[in-house]
Length: 607
Image (cartoon, rainbow, N blue to C red; front, side, top):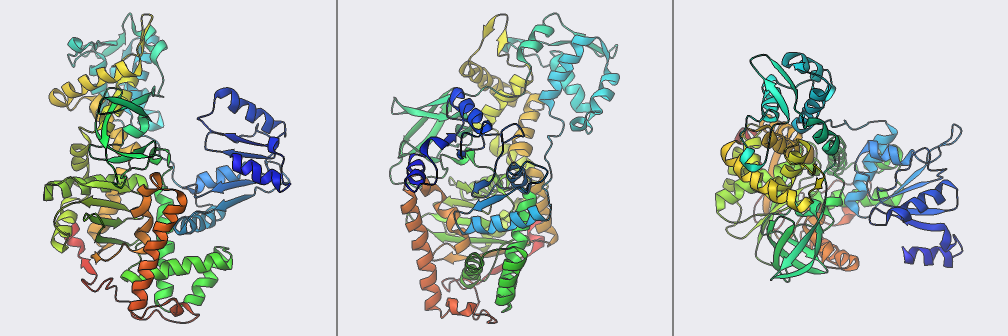
């Protein structure tokens, strides 16, 4: 920010006092001051994260500049739409891309925005913790017939599919039927199933008024290494960690061992590549619908290049997608390199699985699944769980919007291993695999606390006392251990799984992808072992390095990988000259090192 102020003022564009920053890490007073100055037109430029809501009362905005992809068409339209807020004005926005994947993504999103192709809105389906709150609130009003309350609740759209069994399980939980009094959990309503009624308990009004709400309390997690406190992490980041994950804190790499309450225990992991970037929890995921459009775009450009219709691809990019000539050339070059190196352009109808060994001797399986990070998160955890069980070794996972990578030590991947993974992970088995994989994770522990708090199982405020997030987390961990063992069908456990699988991940889209594979609508191709990751895998491979190296050094790593790919292509007689107008791409055999040709994995093996 300081460098930007200095640059803009030194060139006479804007005075330093007319530039401000807005971020959630800044104090509330600073943020409000920036917002007030913006409303009064005292600022020429505001650099902001998603913390600044550009609503109709924020003042007049001339131009919105988005750094990198907004990750969905609706988000792009909403943000750009904050400019030109007048009946005679036009909303204007500029997308600034940071790499070639970003260029492809922004190209597609901008075109989709002009075509008004809006992403579907995700609405949580029958959240049982919110249902528990509302039932307690209803009980305060009057006594209810059980069937009457059920009809009223189902009139709300999020609960229109609420099953009778789930409804009754929540009523029984609130009525104290789970027998958790020994753990300090008491009934919140009076339930009489014989009469078919429920009503309020004496303490219900106070509990409801002091604890209602859906936003969980967050806290900083202390990081302990060898008995010393070395810093802190956001709780949202800690919940995605699993034992063995490598992350960066204070410029050093650490291996996550375990979490206990509000403490995370780690050990130094010098010279090891991070598996989870420290900013991962802040990243917006690419919407599933937008991801499908990006996949179709990739395949279209790849097909035109493969058929020798490069000039047609250029016209498409410049006339339909409105790219500048140099940007169009960059897209064509990027897709050509992928096609020339492995003979496959993964996209909407093709999943590429490539594998290679890195400098540390570990094997990396990259699944090019361009379906967005939420979908890939579900798929990656399922495949990682099955792979770990198959080989009996720990598996590290890296996830992006375009792919996910499984890293492990041991025997080299082969066609039989990949077939086994695809035959085990299918739409019917996905939920059970994921529930087993996440049942004992840190995410399950943290999300259970949130659900238990919303369900009034754990109370933040009661009879003049207020509990800290740390105390609530310790209570939640104890309750979770008991309930997973004795009452795994509890609505609180069920809702925790639902929140993780449907809200944080996207299990429904993941199932859809696996069904497409089973029906042959999406083909799966295996490729390897490769000498280096393919061009489309470069960003996935180096994603973690952004925490331990400067941006300039990260560019050097990407440049090194790119140079190695181009060096290999030249050794095989494949050069960018093939991109001259009207030229067909010669010699695309996808040998990628000449060790194994592309293998088609039949759809019936993946069903």
